[in-house]
Image 1 (cartoon, helix red, strand yellow):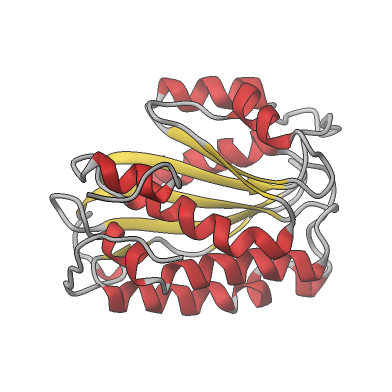
Image 2 (cartoon, rainbow, N blue to C red; image 1 turned 90 degrees about the vertical axis):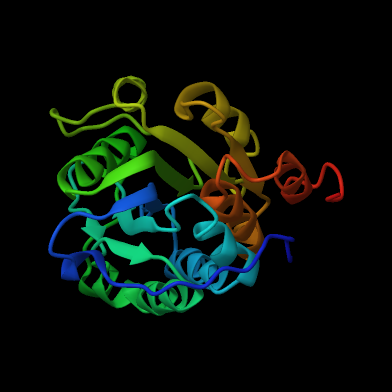
Length: 251
């Protein structure tokens, strides 16, 4: 899938290398489902989908389409509230080359995700995952014009057995109180109405949206479209957004 946006090219520096926190157009956490319902193959397809999306020229251009021309990005794997979360460092995308370098990190992140060491699985703690993503945003020292959590998953929240777990209604309200947008990518393999569940119970914030993938093999195309929309600056033409959603061709 190719979208029509202007090509821009700047120079990228990882967030950790900055002497002071950079100003960016967007902070975004890619919150990936690593719960017990996700097989090793399905987990890899999610990571590969994100990596391939970040190599797409339109997605790369959307990432630098804002006034500042920078996006701060991190990926985090969540599952049951009692299980450890696994995350990448924050990374600044301000060019096509930088997006490609972060794609390389994501493509091999399964090695560091805990799956290779028998860690992970368990229930679907969406609320706890969102809570952790909010902490990542709060603690990264980066100031942004927009802040977003991009949740992908294949199931509804399961009842937590961990007594200190934050559940989804609480996490959704916390994100709203912090002016953080939560969007969803619903993978419809196990729950055919998961997209409606995400819409009714999870997403929050101005313009929050859900995109569906009928199965994990369709994940790559869906996440490419989703990242394009999340990266795209609000000042971009509305026609570009509608085109990405398949509603109308661009002018």
